[in-house]
Image (cartoon, rainbow, N blue to C red; front, side, top):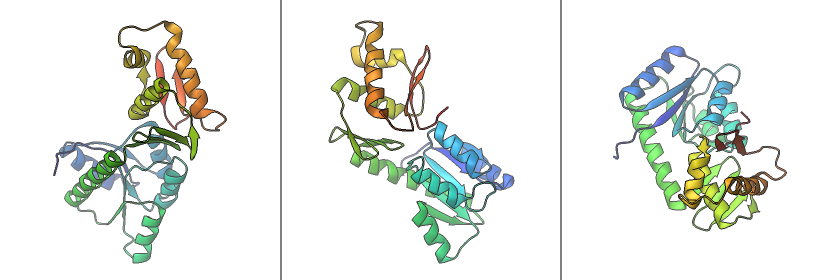
Length: 232
């Protein structure tokens, strides 16, 4: 198997178990964040990109299934999710998969098995995305093969330059992209004038966000732009 270094979010209210998973993944060369409940986990998922999520079922504030429902239907995220739980009945597993889980591990958790499952799941997801060549941020979808952009299923008209800007921002999402990066992407070292990028970004924002309640294209004053679901 290809050696993969993953970024994993652990959402688990049992501090001892969360620490064990965190330390094991770090020892395997991965990076990890941890959240004690579903609400905190959703907040991190809105701000950062993770390769996979390890999600406990029974938690305070927002349990695993409710959080997974909001992740799939609210944030429109397809990040791979492994549910960990003491619930081992078939109906529980079916509920998890129907809600949007990609894998299911019954406690007590064997850390080596969990790490292997994460790597296999992420590798499978990456291969599927490469085959389909589709970028997604929230309900924004860019089919690179067909050069088609949709927002909530509706077509979004794009010029070649704005399509190039959008692809770059989606690949970098949810991270900040500085103005200089975008100017170099489009014009190399021959930037026309200071308003050229601003004009393209204005039209890109108008095309992507339009009248949508949730705005995806964000300006970071004096620095650059972000394309992300979070309102922060």
